[in-house]
Image (cartoon, rainbow, N blue to C red):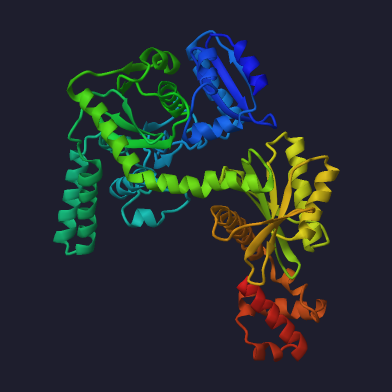
Length: 588
């Protein structure tokens, strides 16, 4: 703390970014400030609660970067958070891109869901974004049933089912008038811009035709389509009669948590809404600017953003290069109030669930770190192996960040070494993973867990030592009911209370790696040939294998045979070996 006190005295009053570090030098929080001295000092000269208190308790040092302006510091903050992924920066963890509905730019266009990386200069017509992906998919399904767009990814050579049920014009064989395609594109574009009447009338006509033809099932389907339009896509009570792309953003704070709501208006109508709820660590003013700026990272920025009077208009306008407005009256003010009401409802309805989820994830992750002596436990990588009598050996790795799975970081490994026991399998997968980490300079985990005992722990440690990597490795000690009772290292055992959130976190990680690995194993196995299966059955040599392959050809056919039927074509002992092997294979 003396070191921090001395550094605080030397801080500048200029704008910039600050990076908080733990005892290991890891960056655990990044923030920006108009006045670095005042902002950074505020962490150490006053009492804090909640997540801010937890952060301050872990700060051992800090550094800072001075910028020319507050706008520069805001943009730098976002880049630093993306680079370091600090534990206490909640936002920018989910790099999801929202779906758009796209009419492709092909000669014979398709109507599809799209997640474009770049919006500007994108080929084809885009409508959205749709934060509710399910609504986007249903809308595309509805329109594709009414309008005969091309359905195939690549042009087929002959007419397909969609042509015969009237959902495609048969572009592969028929000559289609360009005016027909243009009219279809224009009608759908009009619908997606909020003009629903033309499509509604078309559906009513189709419903009447189906009813007159006594096709009541089809008529009911069309009625359901009309109900969907009326309930989900119909005109809003509050709307603006213009074509300006516009978002409305507001927030609500309670019990050290902040809830944001973003209403998306396209063609003057509320298209969709989006939101975030997270622990409030920084000042509200800084958090508002950070949320808005980070929200539009890799997303289309609307021409106009409406906010309440707590937001920094000048800062946001410069950072986003768009018009940011604080409306004082009229429909726009009602929209800002609506966003506030939604933010309040979401936080108050979900508050208990949010607290419970944090206890199960973030807090449990911290508690696990304290048990095993890791002060800032953030990234856990866990491995599991699967095989069938030494065949189709695979490994899976799952990654949990702050107690939550990060599925884009999961990895699969098909084991190549001749020795397929758990010891050598673990050595191979650990070497492949962490050689890659070193070679490609990937993020190293704070903890490695292997789904096995001391043998697997020693195998992993031997490999890490050879790579000069100092990463804690733990295995799982289980009782006769296969329930984890403790974590073990090569030197120590850590007992885990079965009623604790830590135990439930470990169980979730263990179940996840097992599920992931077994699914990969099944996938690999399903691609394995009958020939490779028979190679692993005692008593079946080349001659018998050729006879079985000639007669049965597939694993499915062979598995359908009873033990008695197998004894009719093989010696009893060999038949029993094969029967048991196939039975075990089926159950895996």
